[in-house]
Structures are given as structure tokens and as C-alpha cells.
Image (cartoon, rainbow, N blue to C red; front, side, top):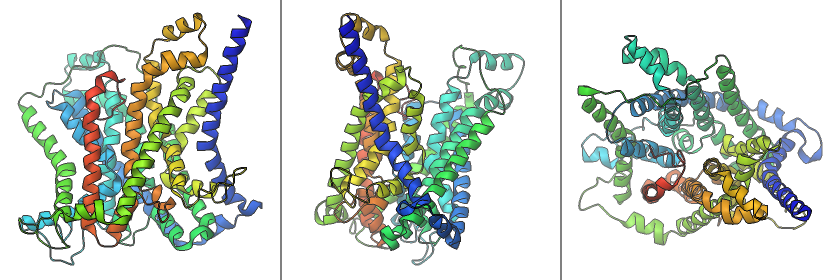
Length: 567
């Protein structure tokens, strides 16, 4: 018995060491290396990187622009996401599942695809506008090349994020509070103003903080809409600095990336400070309130909600599809001019895009597989571990995803600028540095659903196996992992869809031969080949939408909330 106990404790220690190693390599090391480059470049304490960044007038301009579009995009996202969440969660609207799938879709689409779709919908060369006879003259300025355009698209991109968080809070709204207000004679708008919204304040504030962090760190939308208008935010300023100066400017861009991180963390801290100002706890454990019957207003409201879907999803993607079918810029689409040559070019003829498809598939699949394998043991400690350091470990895993992607990209560059110690392996300027950054950034997407899976597993099953003499690793392999594997695999699928056309990280890490789909898409658009960029975008959107539909077939086997598009 003593020998078995010693063996179990040894296995627990081995598991803890393995989890600590994963966290150190993927979270601690890159962040420490980033800070070290700023305060001690070359191993000597110096403030030269900070002074150089502050002395550059572009830094202040880009910082102000970042705050403007970050706050503006957050306001749009919070208003739209909250209103839609209230309608979906509190009323008897029909077709809820299909609506949620469509409304969440922009969040699953890469930001650069969103930007490209809207640019092709409203540009002077728009095949859609030409088709309906409303296209402005060629050479006219696209109205989306502006701060207002960036704010609008950031709001559309992250309104689903707000929707998901607010809807989760509304599901916990206790029935008796609403019924008590209704019994007292309050109308639904009064209930909404005096009961629902005050209780939803924590969810709305938390959603606003996440939308703000996502907006200030977004690269795709400001790159597609801001660079042509010379409206730079911090992520695009870093891209231009790095593209023009290479490793020589790593100190300065490290400072800029930390500046983005500081702005993002300021938003999170402001959210926590606001949440502490009032006590929002609900002691009730009753069922959520019954849906509000819309009566004769149900059909008009449903029509309005689907018009919203048409405006933010269907029309932009339709315009993007039309652009992918035209043979050249400004050519009207007709039965005589429609062609699939653009798809043939990007799939079979262009070496860079063929290589990008292979790289992105490998990176997305590799990141998903590793994250699932790592999430299973890590989530075991996060969900069931009693060690004091478990909470810190969970926060460190969240950090690379919570911070803007550009921060992790610069940290990865600095970490692997030299060969890996003791091995001599050099992954700088290779596809492997992108894979490392994906692993660090997206691990949490597999961890969250896996933790949810653990919370729904009855620990009595593990305890029974332990009583029969099964060690920790045996219990995990034969009892626990099979039960939580579906949730972990769903997280891996989310990683695959997110990484497939990712741009923010890969735009700063790619080199010749390691292009990704997002990078090639960006290059096509920057080079004026929007038709090829549109074809690439339609392919990636089709893959994403197909995977979302496919996962619905086994959604009933997953914990609630694992698939964000499931109502």
C-alpha cells in the first residue's frame, strides 16, 4: 500500500511538472523576453528603446488612433451585442438557433476577410453596386477608408463576442425577480430598465472589456482600411516598422507592443474596478424567466433581426463572392464575364497561395492537435487541482490570448532570434516560429471547453478506479480522458477554424516559404489583386461555415457553452 501511495504521488508530481513546463515555455518565457528587451537590450540596463519610442511622433499619433477606434468599436459592439442578446434570450423569437449561428459567424471569420468583404461591397469597383446600378465613378474614394469605417467593422466583428457574454448572463437571470416586478404592475420596458439591465451590468462591463482588448489588438481591419488612408494604429505601426527595419528595430517595436498590452490591461483593470463598485450577487437559484411573448410584434421584430443578418453577413459575403467571379478590376459581372479563373489561380497556379494553403493547414491542424493533447492534463489540474499555484497557472495560460496578438508575435521573435539553447536549432524565419506562437495563443481555446467537460464528470468514477489500485496516469487514460475528449476536440476544432486564416501573428512572423493564407490574402489586396484575395476569402469562409455546421451533429454530446454558435 505504501509503495502504491508513493507511486501515485510521484505521478502527481510528474503531472504538475509537465504542466508547469508547458506554462513556462508558452507563457512565461516569451513575456519575460519581451520585457527584458525593453529594459535591458543586449544584457545591459538601458531605457533607449523606451526613449526612442516616446520620441517618435508617430507613436503618439498611433496611440491616440488606437484608443479612438478601440473605444468606438467597443461602443458599437456593446450596443449591438447587448440589444441582440436581450431579444434572443428574453423573447419568444422563432428560428433562434439559425439566427445565433448567423450572428456569431462574423466572430469566426478572420478580421481581414470581414474588411475585404465590406470593401468590395461599397467600393467604386464593387460588382454588386454595378449590378444594381449604384456604383460610384471609378477612382472615387471608398468611404470605409476612414476611422469611422474601422470603428464600424470592429463593432460588427466583436458584437457577437458581447452577445455571447451577455446572453450567458441573461440565462442566469432568476425568474422570481422578473415575475415580482411584473406582478407589481411594471411593464416590460420598466422591468428591463430597473431589473434586467442592472443585474446584467457585470456581464455587459466584462463584455465591453473583452471587446476593447480585441479592438485595440486587431490588425486585419486597421491594415485593410487604415493603411490606404494613412491612418495608423499601434499594430499597423509595428508592422510597418518591422517590415522596414527588420531586427534592428526590435527594441522599438517591443516597446510599442508592450504599449498595446498596457492599453489592453488598462481596459481590463477598469472593468474590474467598475464591477467592484456595486454588489451584483444573486442569491436565487430558480429557473430563468419565461420568454416574453411578443404577440403581434413578433413577426416585425423577427424580420428586423434577419434584416440585420442580411446587412452584416449576407450582403458583404455576397459582394465578396461577386468580386471573386470577375476577371478584372472594375469589370461588371455578367453571364459573359463571370469566371472561376480566380479560384483556379489561387488553388493551382500561384505558388505562394498553394504554399500558404499547405502551411496554414499544417499550422492549424498542428496547433489544434497539440492544444487538445496539452489541454487534457492541464485542465485536470485547473478543474480538480487543489494546489495554490493552480489559479496562477490558469491566469498564465490565459495571458497570451488575453493580450493582443501583436504582443505575442514580437515576444516570439525576440525569444527565437538566436538558436534554441543546448540544441542549436534555429526556428527564426521558419514556419515553426508561427506554430509556436499559435500554440501559445490558442491553447486556452482548447482548455476552456475541456475544463467545462471535467466539471460535468462525476469524480466518483475516478475514485472507484483509484480504490482498485489504478494510478493517476492509468485513471486519466482509461477513465477520465475518454469522458472529456469530445469537449477537448470541440476546442481543437475552434483552434483550427481560428488559426486557418489568422493574420495578426503570422503577418509579423512569416518569411519567404512560410506564408499563410492570411498573409497571402493581405499581399493580394495590398498589390491591387482584390479578385484573388476575394477568392481566397470565399474558400476560407466556406471551410469555416462547413465546420460549424458539421459540429452541430455531435453538439448534444458536448457541455453547454462549448460551441458558441449553439443557442
